[in-house]
Image (cartoon, rainbow, N blue to C red; front, side, top):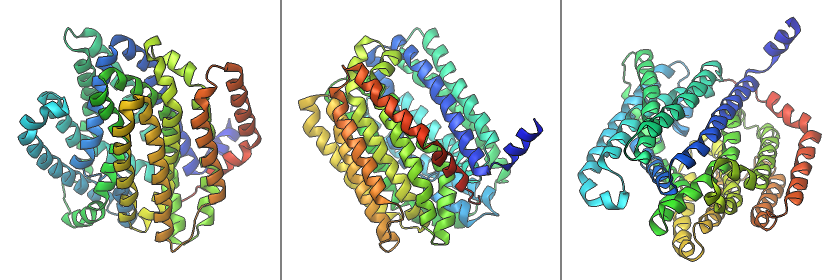
Length: 477
């Protein structure tokens, strides 16, 4: 036991942090996958689709109402003001609240004219505004914990939240005599708000209620050109469901949403390691040492690519577990959605470098072009091919965004590639082939299992290299 404790103490803090985040994400995802089959059986496809329409609006409006202040600019603030992080966090919280109040005064004024288009009751709009008032506190706290590689409190909070919110939502759905979709929304978001309030109070106390307006100017100037970028990114990820709901039905949105739940595995893998990769990237960008960034990032991307292949190959089995037979069509949209997630991850690789050098306007170009293209392609192809077309339009849009993001990074660092693009190109080509061809082999289980076996064998062969990448991430918080 003593030897084990000594070995644990010698493990770099970045490795512990990443491992803890992965555990938290696995627990959260595990609980989510346990509850998804319950909700798909308790709610009709139409009701399940209504819930996802609400969450889509939360994603789109949240970026305006909260101004994306918990994203790149907050990490930059952690780096720029290491001795004033409490004051910085509280100042950002107050700024976010002011923006939220202004946005929702405007939204409620327009509500009589847009209620049919939004397809949301005014009470749900009020719930949304409450979420946006308190959620930034939790976002700021989690971003700071990840930046500082403090994993214990973050791990505990993530697990408690992962258990609490779906439990309250299930109780709400089971006990209601009214709309089960509404009960699901209020139960889930009510539990979220309860958690957010705790951190709102914590940030207020630690910040001593002191607002430094000098931080506001820097954050506003940094995020103003990024607002179209963040909004476009959310539109790209959420517009599919909104457009499917309007152009086909809420039931089709439910099928697409189940597929998104399956594809989320790849995104979760990335978010866990990205927390440690950000400070590592910033530290080496400061010294203009780009090779170590690539040495760490390529194995991570390879690991995620392998995970994407596994998710795609297991799609029929996962959907059978998560939902009833009527959701079977969701299987065929999983491959392009997972492929899109893989190219979405490229944004993190290139964006980390661009954000360090404070050139966010370049990222905006990629996001806006990709979002507009996705909407245009959806208008053309969803009426022809149904909701499955949205998966392929999203894959193409994220691929284009990744190419422009790469251009933005090269422009930022005066033409240097930073990463080994030959390997990234090979991984990307492999994912495209799998995403486009997997639907042809879903009826051949033995062939799919063979691909899964080969993927696992490759992972075992390169396990030392994969483990070693975490040992390199020793960046200072």
